[in-house]
Image (cartoon, rainbow, N blue to C red; front, top):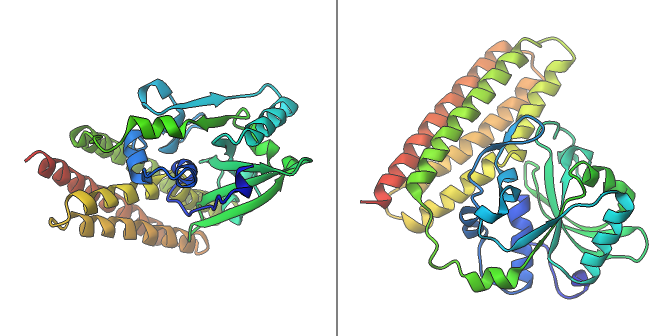
Length: 314
């Protein structure tokens, strides 16, 4: 099995792309997470079946549009799912499973993942009984934790069933044959998409902060604020911005765009900390301050991305 053959979990910037990148590293295929991000249209913000907008779900919608060689398998029941996963592991397939994050327990970061619930891990081993070997290269905690080790089937099956026992097998050899060296993203399209996304996200945050303010001095207030903080980390918001920054560093190194955009990333970490503080303070002025900062950071980001797109076509 793969976990016995030199596979080592690498820290990723996002769970789904990180899963694929870990298999690429294991197979000695030189394609970066950032390249995968643009090729797989990870910048698209779409509604999930739980009623919130997230980035990462778009990667597993309409696979024919993504030009990435993988197949998706779902199972009818727990036993069928278990046997299918055992076969994938024993065949040493590049298999990853998608789960409902707030039903996972091996890291406390999943605790508040009520609204944004997708998490993805590679499964690279099986003990012949009831445990599977997980490779989780990105847990959306404050520091971005990792996990590698055995998990009992009963400890993750509820989370997996919440996403229809979905498991994904990627053909990394075909991915390498297709080549990424000539792939260039359409920055005009991406700039427009990101500005549209920013408006949607801004409205989401401002509306939910207003709703949270109405819950001040109630038992639901802390939960509503902490759910927003989890949304920042689990929706893909921070990850998408890290890939944009990396792209600016690589292709526009002399323009200062990457430095400006790094401030956007830092501001979201500040906002996250302020949300945690606000959750325990019951101070309405703190919510108003956070709301203003969110509106400002989205406006600044849209302006930077617009300049990047214009520079690209000069």
